[in-house]
Length: 79
Image (cartoon, rainbow, N blue to C red; front, side, top):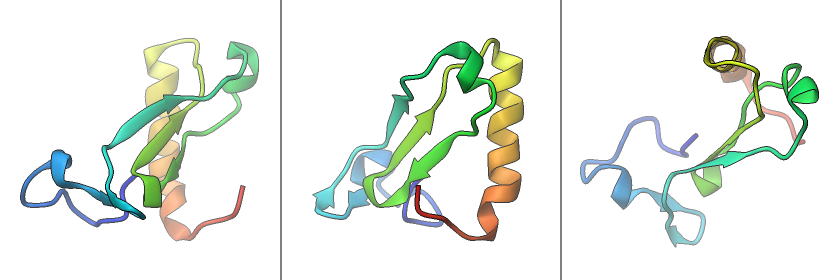
């Protein structure tokens, strides 16, 4: 969820965004648990932000996150 292929030498606190220093942020997606169960996590790399829908369990979160990582590296789409 960053615009960099690796963590900077100074750590996450030195991440840069589109307008300068930008903290890494995890943001909850406002949706019902029922709707969230069908959504994958998304990212805004220029803002160092990861968007996570609400899931029923940690196991479901882990499965959806790994699916997004596995298939999300083939390109991007505008949402």
